[in-house]
Image (cartoon, rainbow, N blue to C red; front, side, top):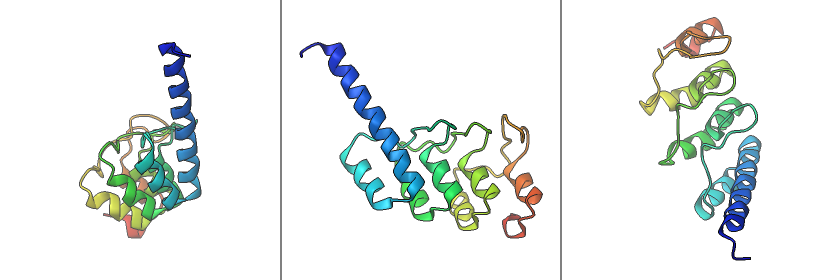
Length: 141
C-alpha cells in the first residue's frame, strides 16, 4: 500500500512496540540487549511506562549501575523526567538507597541536590531532605 498515512501509522506502531520492549529490557537489566537496541533501532531513550518512569528512572530504582552509566552517555537522555510521584532519577536512587548510583548521578554535574520536587507527596522537598528522611547516613552530602 502506498498511502503515506498508512505507512506512518505502521512506523509509529513499530516504534511504540520497540519502546515498550526497550522499557521491558531496562526493567530486567539486560544491558547487552539495551545496547544493541540503541545501536540498531531508532530507540527513544526517554520512553515512559504507565507510571511515567523513563529507562533512567527504572535503572536507578532497580540498582542497575551499568545501565545508568550507559544511559547517561546517550546524547538525547533527559535527566529531568519525573515519574508519576514527581521523583527524578536522582530522587528514585536516593529513595531506594542506591548509593553507587547516587554518586554516579551527582558526578555528572547534571543533577541539583537541592532542586525541589514539583509535585506528589514530597512536593517542595529536595533530594537532600529525602536522604535525611530515609536515614541514609551514607547519602548525606
